[in-house]
Length: 240
Image (spheres, one colour):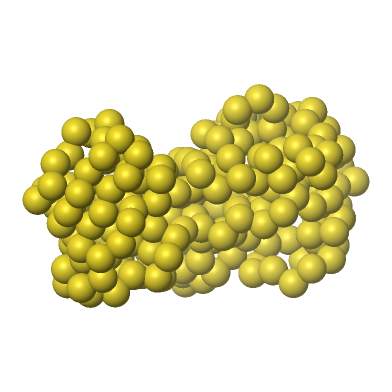
């Protein structure tokens, strides 16, 4: 059944105009009045809905009952990702959403190729928010990961955050072993850009309380590291 996100608060029995982007998808999918779909507003759970009217640019639906289904992890992971080049951040956010990440914090680090001006950052954030919504619709999640404005690494390290895990190929202990020995908990995964964090940046993260852990003997690309780490945590802490 098609699933769509609606930013407005939803409630049983409500008849609403679907957001323009959702109405467009309904038209593209050639859904007709009387067909059903699921809608969610990001506050948890979802609603069965029936299409009332369908046009090229407008569609309306009436909500049925509320289903308190969730697909969230029992712990919250913040992905603190140094900005990669090109469209890699789109891929990282999309797949991290599918794997259950609760928050995304873009970071600027010394070796980042991408440097965002205030105007570009605003456009990127709007684009990444769209990636989050689409990934939630596809993956069955009824809650959206929060997306923070980009920060310099030192700024983020100075702010409160769940326990920080620094993914580093130079670390002696492995993430898999650490996860097996520790109970599920909220945490932040700190991932470097292409070329990794500098030694000074890693030292600063460790001085701020980050725990350095490795992903094994192979050096992973920045677009692989966070996803592999999330998969490791899911396997250790959420095997179902």
